[in-house]
Image 1 (tube, rainbow, N blue to C red):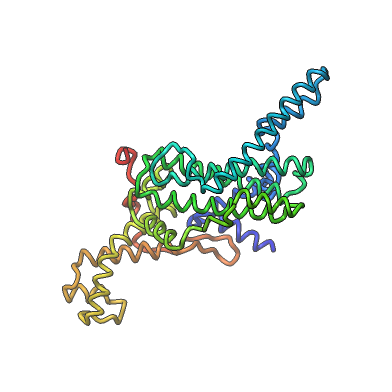
Image 2 (spheres, one colour; image 1 turned 30 degrees about the vertical axis):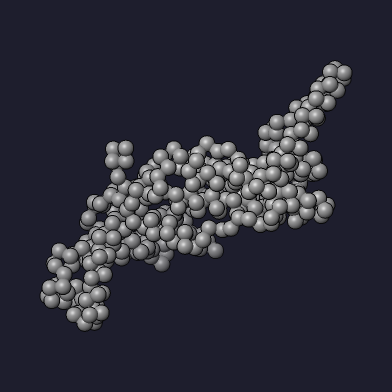
Length: 365
């Protein structure tokens, strides 16, 4: 097992392993924050359930006051306030469910308005469920890790979707970025619905779970996962230099040399995109019987000889092939792991420049 462990560490240190350092840092996050399952099950919701609640902590503190007469007055006032809070959330959740949140006022009037409305509706449902579970489970809530975990999932998805909407607004609400917004919000709303479904399906009192389900989702399940078509559309946007990709990666460090693996990937992407129309033209020439497909090793030379492409275009395709090959190569080690060497000895190793896909700050502004 020792040699396997050593191999994994060496691979993490390898120059061409783009996620090696991330892999090495995982134990640090686990050591400092605890396992991910602990964070989800106990910390996200359970740790702040009382302190973030507008009334419960105050109610608890009122029971510890020395002046009993004053404590009873404060307790009664806070208890009544809590009853109003729960009732208002219940009514609001039911009404917004019946109307599909259409009448909720939002800060925008554009097409992303529906996501603001649905998130507001789910926020009311989350507040209602929080009070129901805190009241019914009390101190047992932290020990009911699946319940706490699902409530934490809802809170996390609400936070993520709200951040996406805020970021979209801050960047100027570019129409080209709407697909990213749509995918993120649809995914979050679907995950919220799934978590609520899991909570109510496993509620100890089945009748209460059924009633709550009808209050929150009077017409049954509503949200769907983002379509594969939308995911494909987004993936294509991210695989070509476009304003959406520039804005998405603006604050990410992208090296402009091929001495770094991320720089190699960016360089390869630039070269492959430049070669795509030339390669497409060559394929069309083969289909029209203007050029023979075999042998592939001399395809470019024969295309130049037959004047299908120019020598300059052939060099562009060759550079793309070299860059593509360079990117997929991995570091190699000797059998005893004592010697490391880079397997690529192509001309790209001597090319220390990259055509940057990302614009500068001045170009963005």
